[in-house]
Length: 329
Image 1 (cartoon, rainbow, N blue to C red):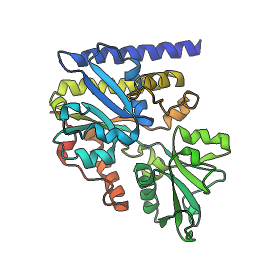
Image 2: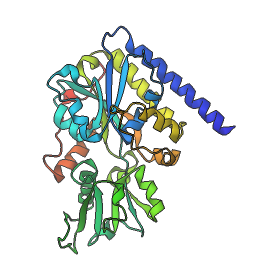
Image 3: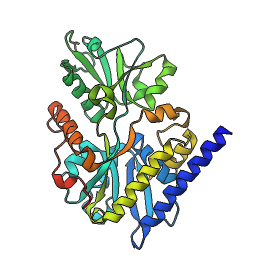
Image 4: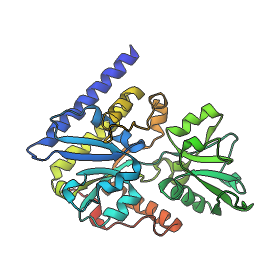
């Protein structure tokens, strides 16, 4: 009975999302395109995709994270996404002028965790090796920023390179499949894959979000929209309400519903979503940091985070112009 009630509530929320979708179409001639990278960012829009209809005026497209930047940089602007979810680092560098796109808000606030077979703290990692996901992108940059925050020296090491006894030694890994294969004392990977490592005897021993900034985490993925859309305040209000309803939908949807919604909107029909239904328990989804924070509310925190990343790598990001942050008039 409880499961039936949960499904019923999910359907009600999906109906609310669908209703706002119809409103978004209004009298627009062109179907709006909404792009997002596969993985945790797609969770934020899963409810919207679950309520998608053929005549709602919006096309949702889930792509590999490696190509999301190309969806806002086409010379032919008509081919670019109308709305795009992307890492704040890429958004700040590519769109930070606010000329072509504005940030509506943050949709994820971090989903990185330390996993190990023995209890570890940041300080205990000195002299040890840590396998780090996407070492030169947001995950790796964030972990390095956390080490800097706590005054811990670090270095990147490659195979055969001597490890330093007085530093945290970082090894690049491409995914969670490296856990238990690459020689390391600890790994920094993302949910929902972090929880799955229990099958290999690993446990979550550190929350990178909490280590960086407490329960608020940091601005990880953001939703941006073309300025031709943000000029319409009513559209922004309608779209962001839809986004909030979508995130609310996550609280009652089960893993199968989430994967079905995301999988049905992969741009490449031959590509399957990386999300796995058995892993998407309510507990794991909650650790993915999915929530919507309006741009005007998280501007200061976003720029603080970007400065922390720039201290690690001066080319990693950029401080956007004020025009980049959408503000209701």
